[in-house]
Image (cartoon, one colour):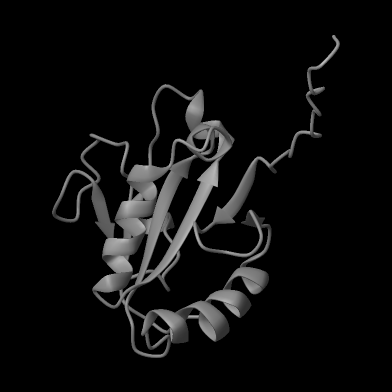
Length: 142
């Protein structure tokens, strides 16, 4: 095609099936808690005005398909709102949630270092006060 620029195709970025994702992180995802909390507590929290030693920790369980397709505005807004109120946020995703049809969480299986876990896509009654959140017992944070 004369006079036309050729389109250059980039290699796709393959995301792991489970990881921790944050919209302002320098890496697309973190595959270990250690890597995430190292970045989050030492770089992001100070910039965001969050005290990682005293802030409550909120876990959010996301669907991988929204991360893959960059259809993540609702997640970005939720994370920004929680952080603006002084919470540390741990947004994890799993590809298995996209195809399961139903997702079940037993409150006693939640990590105890989370003060609250949010399932933004759930209407299941998860006990402990509300239909979309589960409160875990407060304890020390990583």
